[in-house]
Amino acid sequence: MKSLFTTILDGLTYKDLSGHRQPRAYTVMSALILFFLLIAIGMSALHRYLLMSSVKTAPISISLSTEVPPQLPAPTQPTGDILIDCPVNAGEWSLTPTYISQNYQVIQPACVYMGLEKTIAWALAVREGYSRAEATELLGFDEMPIKQLERVMIPTDNGLSDVPVSFIPPNPDLAEWRLDSNNKPAVTYALRGCFRTSTVVGNRVEVWGSDYSVICLVVEDADNTHIVYSLKDHIYTADAIPMRSFLFFGYGAEQSWEWIGTQVTPKVEITDPASTANEREVVALMYDSEPWDAKWLMDHYRLMMKTLPENWQSMTDESEKQAILTGLMEVTP
Image 1: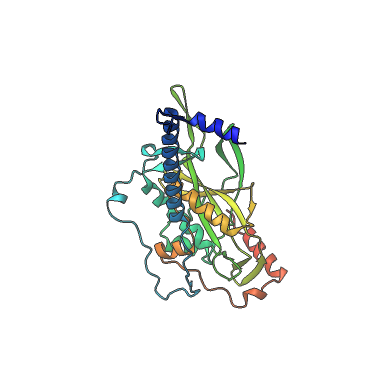
Image 2 (image 1 turned 90 degrees about the horizontal axis):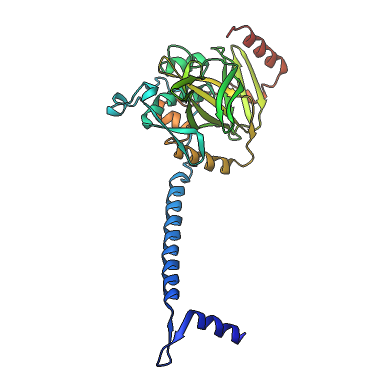
């Protein structure tokens, strides 16, 4: 063992004329390289810590009243130059890949997302007890910002894929509540990137996105344990499993965003809400966005969850469920 140690020591140092050991030149260079490498690793770790700290903020304790205020304040609307200067022509937008996806990209300027957020607010409102008609009126839409499609063409690593989509019932009178175990709003939306619906081939542009020049993918994380449905005088409460779904929103010729369907598959069960929330925040940040939830809806549009029906927990009669289904089928989309 002593011989091995001496061999290593002789390889790293040498004895000068006075018999003192001195480090060899390459030993000094190696030590310097290691020193700067450790500094770089430390700076990288610090940068990652600061980034994660910005998205893993401590949960804010809030109390959402289930009472709708007598006079509902008007939704807050973005004002100033950011809205005036924001291009409405999708051809003027810049879509660039992120390191997590080449197909689902980030839009610049970020003010473009303001229009998308208004449609997201509508989707949140109809998950918090507002009927489709009420949400449409309160958010200033002329009609429901939805369009029922059967399929949506999306880009994949292997080319284009035509995927089937489903849709929420469009009955204007239908109301629903998605509730967690504390009877609070349970739905959060988050951006997963956008893509143009056209491809440049040589000197020719091939359009494959129907009426939409840009489509965005949004995850819907429903951490609900119950869903309450209400249609006219009928109320039905069903148990629910927390699920993640994938929604498509299209930017059309009328320069507005429409909810154009929910991907039939995949739908992913949420088994670790904390991990899902962390991932949702980090990825949304990469797309110059933020998660959209009940608190966001209240802060930006002054809409809080509507009052739950009286005795909703006991409304599990199957005849009520059938009455609601019958009422939904009577409305032609």
